[in-house]
Image (tube, rainbow, N blue to C red; front, side, top):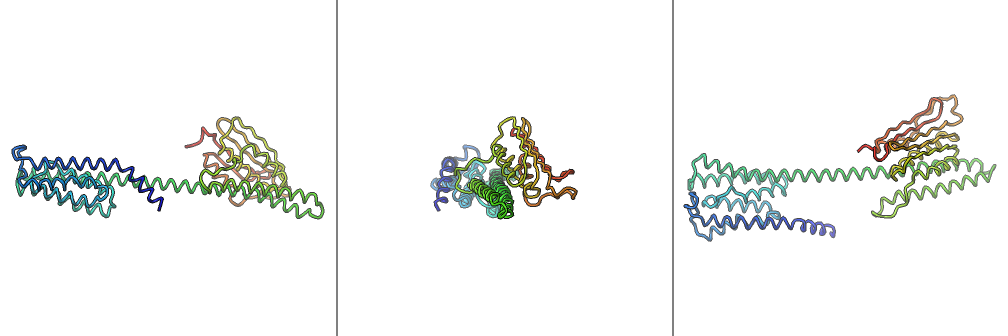
Amino acid sequence: MHTSTYGRTVKSKRQRPLYALDLCAALALTAVYLGFARLTAADDGQPAYTGPFWLGCLIAAAVGLPIAVRRRWPVAVLVTVLAALTTASLLDIPREPFAAAGLAAYLVALAEPTRRSVPALATTLPVACGGVYLGEAVITPAEDVRGAVGVTGLVLLVIGGAWGAGFTVRGRRAGAVREERRRSEQALAEERLRIARELHDIVSHNLSLIAVRAGVAGHVAEADPQEARAALKVIEETSRSALAEMRRTLGVLRTEGAPLGPAPGLGRLDSLADEANRAGVDVDLTVRVAKTLAEGTQLTVYRIVQESLTNAVRHAAPTRCRVTVEADEREIRIHITDEGPPSASGRPLRELPGGHGLLGIRERVMMYGGSFEAGPRPEGGFAVSVRLPTEGNQRP
């Protein structure tokens, strides 16, 4: 309720200048029609109004003053103005092509739905044109048929053109609203996908390490208690790290502006390598970066390496893995290769790992306009190769 009231207040403040302009137009039209009501036939050679002045004042007020409130009651204002102008035409008052009706018709097309504005136009045009033609060619002929038709056509052009302008503006505004809604929905979908991708990477990586170390602890619990305690220590540390990362990621779902911890970047690659080493993957890490990368780019590199090492732990441990991250002024190159499990010698090449890991890497790479390749190596093992453009070379 509070939000709705606030929205109406803001809208009212924005429209105050428009209401002021409408009031000025209403007063100007009223004054013009008061002047028409006081004209004599000799002033312009056209038939003039000869009725009582009070009636001319009433008609002038009915023509002009409703324009001041056309934004509140568009259809009612159009009906009132149209009735007044038709009466004025039959009494030979107007000397202009129904400007007040045009202003009213514009707001009807702009503010009213099509199911109401189209019937309103279909009623307005014949009534206005009929009144003008009767006044010009039948009741007090001032023009021949051709002249009367010309004046009628001018009135038709003014009212129809004003309605068409309002309808066009309404369509453009509706299109802008739809486009804004589409962009908001797309941004929301992208944010949800980003969060889902982050959560997948965190959970998949850390649970894989926990599962491996838990298996080790269970296997050597009796034979080597010290090794079992070391494995349990790794499980504890990995669990704490996973919880910290999940809190940071889920923080984006809370109140806007909530403080978040720093996103993992290139400085955390050593920790990834150490975790993989403890899970049975001997990692040879090489990082050569010519310049500091943006935080978002560093996070992307980190997640790509993390997911690749997770796959190595899950599908190839114990094994050896080489990770190379290089960046120059133009692009970032990431290569991760593992030798496969020792028992894979002489067996068919292993298939692509299942799940969403490689799909997540592909989505991250596509977001930056880079290239991605992944697959088994002919000599055994698995390889992931990624190329990302640097910030200044990314596709718009």
